[in-house]
Length: 266
Ligand code: ADP
Ligand code: MG
Image 1: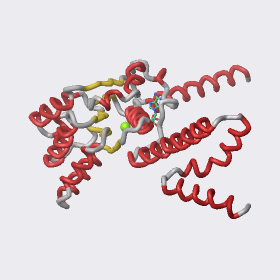
Image 2: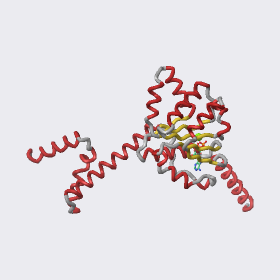
Image 3: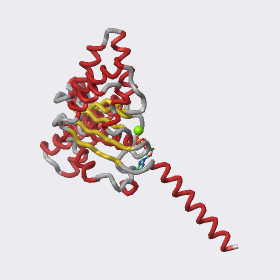
Image 4: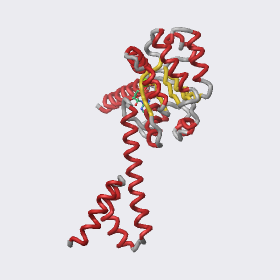
């Protein structure tokens, strides 16, 4: 290659780097060949390249948001067996997966016994929100309260509250397993209050509302918290028994059936 030919290429590499277009930089020779082969015009070439850059940016953004959300597991709707939970309103779940409630800064509460798939659905909904461009933070209620207490002790509470307030969707999993101290309950109440009309919150719990005072410690605080939380809320009740329990019972039953057929056959 002559020096004359190299210079534009060197400049192009420099400009594309400076403009932060790594995918264009990586892909343009290949796309140029394809476009020459397909007899695509200059606009077509530019369109293909900009589409590739955009897709890569979206993919990386989703990846970054999913990492930052700190989901405890990788769960998706594809792995969720809706037939196992007939009481669940599948239409409502898919409606929620469109994330319009996050735009509207509404709340979502999932209520059901342990093992019915609340965390699974919360993760699946949270990941979908990340794919759609929303930042998410996933925590357990106990974990959040501990972090709040620590931040308060280190005089960093305001900073933490401001950081949480900027997140469009806060997921608070497992409200109800651990009762909070009075301070803990009050700090949690403050976070819930801040979400009100400022951002969305998703709460999963094994406790019906009337039992919330048992973890929050006071009827008055629970009343005020529910007042804010249930102002604009989607409630997803999940009835039934633990999925894993049902699965293991099913497999034991089929094992027994298998043994009986063997006995008959021998
Ligand atoms: P919960 O949070 O309600 O206690 P989890 O979401 O943790 O329940 O569910 C417990 C386990 O069972 C998880 O591994 C989850 O993926 C699985 N599970 C629960 N419900 C279903 C379902 N309907 N289809 C597939 N897996 C399920
Ligand atoms: Mg759970």
